[in-house]
Length: 106
Figure: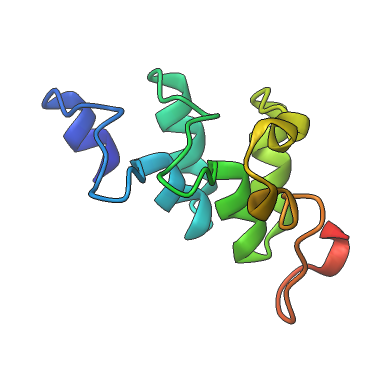
């Protein structure tokens, strides 16, 4: 579906009312191939939503280390949270744990 939308000229950095972009959702839903595809077409891999969450936060929230690793491989700055509001720093991508999935994030 992502390929089709891109081939039809979809805006790669379109966002919803909370400023979440397709790459936020792909990272959260653990669609690694879509994350790679979106990044290769110019999606901003370090974009922030209205709460200052990045796709890396979304991937960490999902609990899947494979998506986190993919974003890091794409050059996402893990230290970016230093420049975010304090409430976000408390849940930086490297400090998020979930009771499910891959616990290697901690």
